[in-house]
Image (cartoon, rainbow, N blue to C red; front, side, top):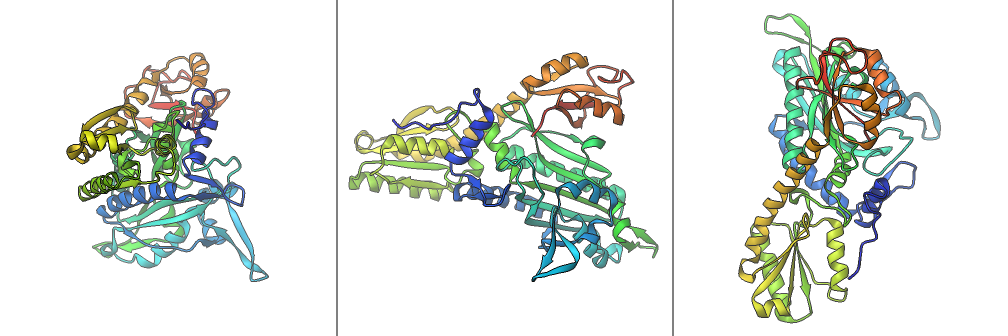
Length: 472
């Protein structure tokens, strides 16, 4: 049988990841450093994620819009913290049409500035609020250490922006979108995430508060999967977003923004993948079930077609692999590598016995079932696999989350991976000290009892409980 040539996870996790991306035909490097070509299988996964997320976002009342990719530099300079936070990552256009531009244009790193410019024109009265929009677009952030899906100079994402009458309304929206993200990651990606607030050192540039969904990869590193930002009045002041309230008084609006990206595909790879390849949750698998046809006999082909039709009528994304000129072993390995949740093997022998062989990707277990019940059995397996992947992700995160009360112990253990629950005083100095010599950061402030009454770093009274870890 043909074998997928993958570097084992335990031997070299980054090499394993690169092997998966390449051999599962998800993406490859683009012509410009840090750019990415997403191949059909990878883009089909993104389309399924996008459709699911788009439905959830629209259910909150947000509407999709499109904004320009090129943003005048003066827009970014209106919000001091924002431009300072993004300036190392900016790509700037200085010439166009063969001439030097009168004002440099920034290639969109995120859209807060240009959107708030228009919000200031669109919002006049309290009746215009809330104003909620969402964009599906690409952005450019100059990346010095690119890795496909995880950190690329150009990537696809969704970014939402809202305007509200009060700070309380904006805070509520920020939390609501965090929950939308958490549920999507749990229900669709089968990834268990920790949610909480970012520390000041990790906060989005220009926000009052940033909240995050953090997942734990199988190499023990954390991955920020999505963020939701409460901007308070910061951008409203910078862009003069006012409204007249019900009594005719002029007030500043409050804004939010929130986003996820193709980085989530990288998360799916590293949470669910194994030494045999990708392992896709059924909700985002382009083919949920592949019927592998064994032999050219007309009866076998007809039975495979009937099975595919039955699966599709049940709402399953099914596909018949009729490439009988390619060996069975090669085809099996290919679908396993691509992470197809369920494989059905059907040949003359199975047809004569009135059976079909079902193979589930997550356990690689095989079972024979009656042919007339194969579609029903495969459909049921999809729900089982989705639940099993989430349970496995949750168990892994919980098993690799450790309370820590001693800085020396933390420094010794952090290199082995995992998340560490610690008490923190909340000072800027202690946050910087946490990263010195450890390579770790505060992933988020969580709602949990601190493991000690005093800060891990300073010994001062603990104000927060935080999750620490190394991250992508």
